[in-house]
Length: 84
Image (tube, rainbow, N blue to C red; front, side):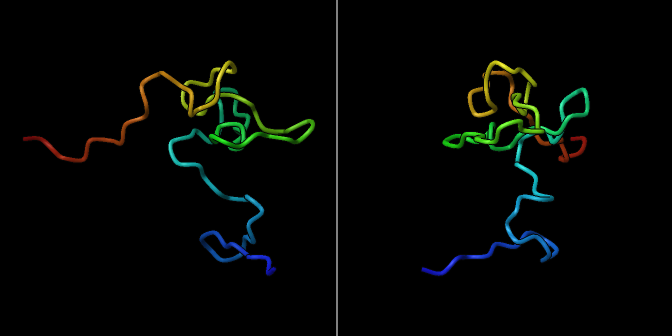
């Protein structure tokens, strides 16, 4: 079976997760620590010992649940409709 190679925008990333952004998830918490995307993805678990990323909700920054379990108001895109 062949191994597939995935490339992010720019063509230099070979699927190692560098430079990727999870939609709807903050990239950093309030203290400036990067947020763990594996922790915030449904069906995934962060299996790394001593993970350098914060295991916090990517929406409300709670350490009690992941982003897919958050009941806080979901982020809304900015209103670009203009004045009526």
